[in-house]
Length: 110
Image (cartoon, rainbow, N blue to C red; front, side):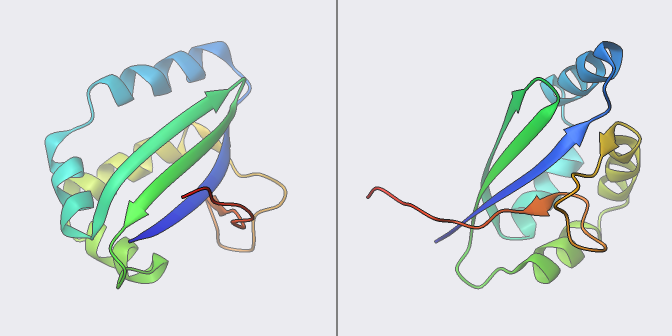
């Protein structure tokens, strides 16, 4: 089991933030099925202001490139990601090409 932490900002607009929350109250079933097929076992997204933190629990053999490729094989997942991208602002700390920026794990309590 591996754990990943990622961050991104929503656009600085209360309507966008409300829209993002509403979309996530009703995530499309094809998107959730595709996430599971990709090896993602659990996702939690937290919001503070417009900064989001996503915690993911993934299979040991999953890596970012592998799960992204598997996940995006589903056309509805591609559609969902394009829609979500209209609501995002990439954080300044993101590496080139990153949307959700990967965070460095620094502490774990087992």
